[in-house]
Amino acid sequence: SITKSSRQREALPAGIVHETEYIRDDAYWLDNGNAVRNSMRDFYKKTGVQPYLWITEEINGSRDASWDEIQASMEEVYLNTFSDEGHLILLFYEPYENEYKTAYLAGSAAKTVIDDEAAEIILDCFDYYYYGDMTDNEYFAAVFDKSAGRIMTVTKNIYVVVALIFAGLVLLFVLYKIIAMLIKQKNVKRQQDIDILNADTSKINEDEAAKLADKYKEDQEV
Image (tube, rainbow, N blue to C red; front, side, top):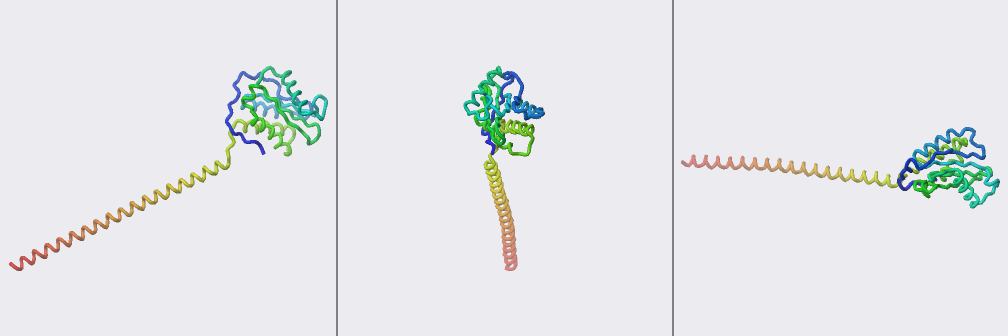
């Protein structure tokens, strides 16, 4: 799986990075690196950090370089290649088929965007797409395409989304019940008013009839 992005990041301001070449392909894997460069340029536009992809099968002539040797080589490449702190070296070291290592080295300015979580997202993308049915060009292009978008956007938690939807449905149900109850009460009150009016009318008619009967009786006696 690919690490989720838990915070919103702001792109590195323009002017910090002096744009350089994007790819160092010591393994000669990329017969046409334009697709990869385009994806890396898009990564640069979104993050403000210029990535530098180093593909190799050997580190200092060795196919069994240690992590200390890898780190030292990356630091040397950064020092000799860039004149700013806004670059990000991404190493893809595959000395043997299907046995690879990935590593990164970010300048001090680049680290404000490419923090540990963001770097983990990129490295996870290397792993995630490695066994897909892609050419080398498509593979590396996908890594930069997918990682840039994920780094710069907070990943939505599906459980939170489901909980919000459920809460919305519950609220709608409660509102429905309240409205239905108010309508019912209004109808009951209306019927009560009608019954009272009918009752008053009957009482008035009875009183009038009684008065007429008394008057008729008095007239007879006279």
